[in-house]
Length: 173
Length: 173
DNA sequence: TTCATATTTCTGAAATGAGAGAAATTAATA
DNA sequence: TATTAATTTCTCTCATTTCAGAAATATGAA
Image 1 (spheres, rainbow over the protein chains, first blue to last red):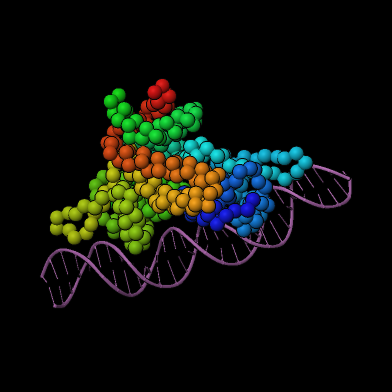
Image 2: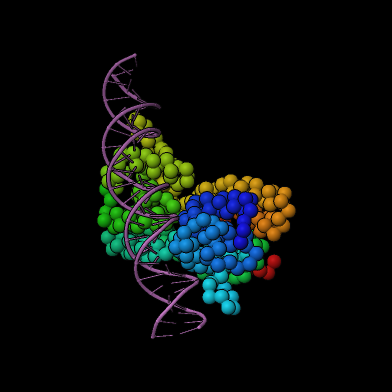
């Protein structure tokens, strides 16, 4: 797909943002491009539109699939793979947050627990207490994420748009 | 302050986690150390405990102050600065999320808006619609963050511990 | 103001990460 | 099965980031 200068600018901005989110610039750019495409496109198309190496695009697509931000599609009589981005921004945000949470807390509870047990063993109550608090935080984060996975995206949109009002409600519970 | 092997292990783990959160390992380690300290400690103390260069500790403390995770303290008859970490883990999480959100969406709304206006100008409706959705998402994120800043930490702990139940409640609204 | 000490900024080296191109692998068609 | 196109993995280079040590700056006491 041909892209206009405006689209190019958007994609570049999106790429910059990605780097701040711990996503490689080219990966975010590939995502930005797919987000602006009307229909599924193939890898070669992405390469020429963004002037990136084919290998780089391949790696980026794999990464985006891990985030579940793009899906593969196949066309009859064409052996190439086509890709589309999740077009609903709320679903997009949700999946990004979910994958980031996973990457960022992966194994953390276990690691802290290991230290916590050692601290208790040694009778170091102060350290144990601090570690316990940290563990409670981490495991709660995991629980919230687990629970969130069971609800539809529309709920997040609703919750986010309520914004502050929601917190006001909780305060009254 | 002298630290035990268990504390060392915890600090190292915490440092590793930091890198996944986009925080330099030594910065996260300094924070981990302060979190385990009973009282305020000075920079030199941090250096010897963690075997880091003085300059590195200085930079790390500055970074942690930006996150509002550590506070300065001064002791009578001592010209050195002493540092303490926020000890409440919920307040800690809150401040980390707030600063990350700030860094990660800083200027994003404006950047997308700029592209959006151009797309409208060019009469590219499809692109404009997609950009508009993206902008709605980003500005909602900012609004939620703004609203969150006005509520006490205890509320977040409450909300997080309610976890899934809370989402169930929203579904019924 | 001068001296001593605490702290920050600058600079360069080492480690890490991103991305291009080549090589290898996979898959479809004849 | 052989051939060719599509995709992925490997490797090397270049850019970025982290961090130590040096130099500069700031701060408090005499």
